[in-house]
Length: 485
Image 1 (tube, rainbow, N blue to C red):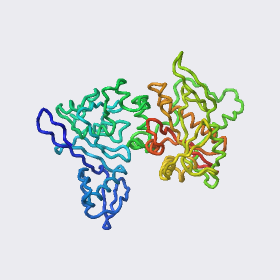
Image 2: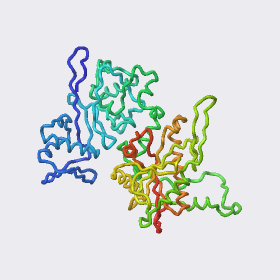
Image 3: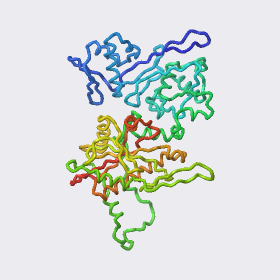
Image 4: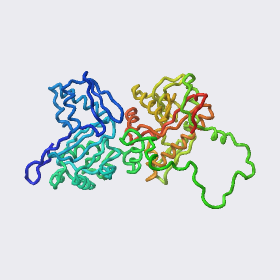
């Protein structure tokens, strides 16, 4: 796709978008035509293809122009396109935009189903840089990214970084096209598709913050949305979880902090305290359970009691912000919440529960009821498999509780600290889960990873509107407990 004419001169060379294998991936074809992708000691079967397709697929090492896959008449292009799509779904491709043989940007997918699409801006469109977009150094690279984007852009040409920076002020496309070093409509289209750029309505009177997205997005601060997207699974391609990245370079920090200098007051010598209360005993008995007794699964009656005690709405009341100001409704629950927001929701993936069918449910805390949500069985399996992997367990939990946040409930009131307050709420709710499970003779385990992109697909809710911020495994504990936490 070429750029518009500049000062009456010849149209600039058109840009080419190519797909290529990420560096550590290779393709291997056996004599029967089975093609597999190999990376990091793993092999992923991609299916059976013709010898001609296997030959053409070798071009994916250096780069295969996506335009060459557009033919509907030749079966080899269809077959090759199918292979490329399969590789893309597994995150094994990156995309290069080049002009006149020179790389402009390399696009690195951050979500599994990313496919580069070029939106087509008109010359009259006014474009601006998203307030969530940022550029930074990553190793020896310079990257442009956003928590809302499905991909990040590795900048190969410094003039592109400079051109993007000028869009901190909204500018019409025709003005961009007249400036030297214009990046081209192809790049603008890719950035628009990833929501790193957005179109500004010149007639809108509320400013760019309101023009960029819905009212829920308006309430997000930059650092909060970035932290949410990058500290959860689903919207980035970074290493994630307990992988001990610095174990070979730095010794493990001490389990207990070294004491401060000075004379200590030994509390063990203080007069004997009264016997511990029931609450104190529960705190000391609390532990994490990673193995559940599937021969005696949790019952619906037990689940109902558990939810009633940890999350059911206890009371409601209204309050105004001031004389004649907005009315706010509060719904108190058994655990504390910052500012009384209570923006957390519980979604249950049920694998084994006596009296309750396997599936995905929302807990209606006001009505004390479970509402089934229609999802694919594969999505339920994926959530349970992720929980099993995160716990390092042999089997999936009987029930997986996903704690989701309605972010606007907190960010409508608080600035700069909204997401931090949400996470504090999650912490106290998890401890409430632990204590109630212990009291009921059940087992539970907090899980620190949740897939925000999968949750969005299952619920149909945008990740910035409502999304997972924690998970908790619940079920009947195996009598022989092998690990504590």
